[in-house]
Amino acid sequence: MKFSYDQFDLSGVQTYPLKSRKSKARLEDFAKPCPTDVHVGAFVDSLPDILAAADFKAIVRAIVAAKEHDGGVVWGLGAHVIKTGLGPVVIDLMERGFVSAIATNGAAIIHDFEIALVGATSEDVDEALGPGRFGMADETGRLLNEAITNGVAAGLGIGQAVSEFLHAKTPQFGRSSILEAAARLRIPLTVHVAIGTDIIHMHPAASGAALGEGSLRDFRYFVSNVARLERGVYLNCGSAVVLPEVFLKAVALARNRGIALAELTTVNLDFVRMYRPQTNVVARPTAGTGRGYSLVGHHEIMIPLLAAALVSRPELKTEN
Image (cartoon, rainbow, N blue to C red; front, side, top):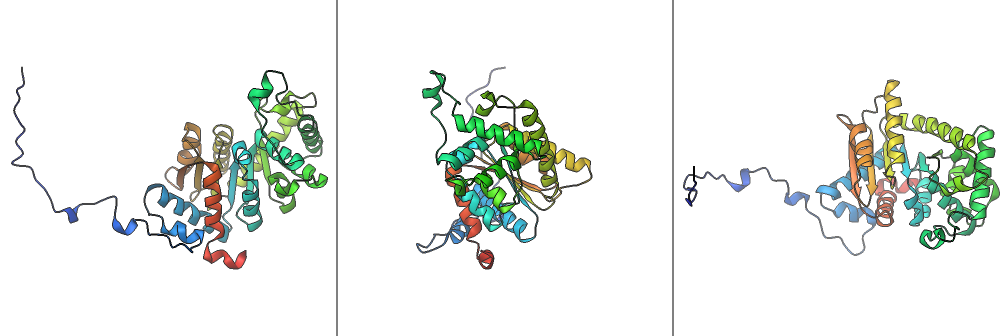
């Protein structure tokens, strides 16, 4: 059957009044011009209540509420957060009470450790790989493995072992170290290691027994921290695989023990959306109960903005 060039008859098309339609973009949700002399909190309030801006505001409210009502705020930090110079911002949040616990990976503690020792980190891999120098900084491999091996033998997890080691050594740039701050402020910090992924595993001093036992111990500490987030917030910042997987298992164990985590808020913050963070942090743990958010943006911009929005809240001024 052949069709023809007949025009569709529009004479019977039905319309309706514009005001009767349910619209997704409404004037009351629009942005407001920000005065030139305003603080960051007011700037955030001026953002539109639409899409990512609305999510950003909701995240700020959730973290503030968790702080005010002891709901707990656990930060998962990938190495990129450290490499982009955000240690001082995180430490300030730790000192202000916006951090209940920190989870991180092996690469992040390497960068933080090097910053504490010499005030610099992140070698040029392309330049170092060919001559066989990649990952072979003496102090990084020797001292970190020493801290882990001795600390685990004393009954600590990797995070506490390295944090206490730095705190005791008082290195030149220690006040810029998240690890040192965790020991100083008595904030739990756990490290979740995949054997063979970190440069310190290339050194002769690396102990598989210590790395395995310490990381498993830290996993169990982390589960305890996640189990306290019934009305709290978990933020995954810059970890694409390890921390999202560890977090999902922690949620599973908590619920296995009858802890519902029914009002949990989760946030993934990275410069692209990836499968595991989106699935294991944002979607699955909050399905049917809590709220999950995904913020897309560069860490070196978004995390300072989030921190500034938190510390500038007028309701928190008396506590700072």
